[in-house]
Length: 52
Image 1 (cartoon, one colour):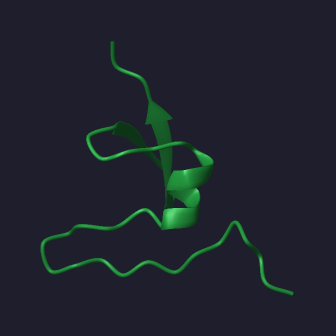
Image 2 (cartoon, helix red, strand yellow):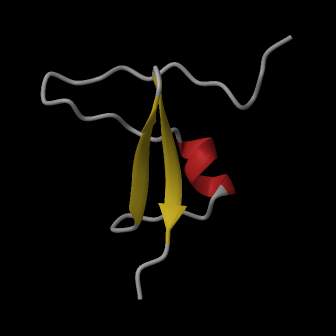
């Protein structure tokens, strides 16, 4: 069974990662939006944020 909430993403040489299209669609994210990255032990939590 494939987990739709899991995606393997490669880090570029510049340290950039891409948020998969299906995740961006689900969260209604667009170019120019911001995310908050939180280091929790051995993993990173990425949250969509709204800046007014």
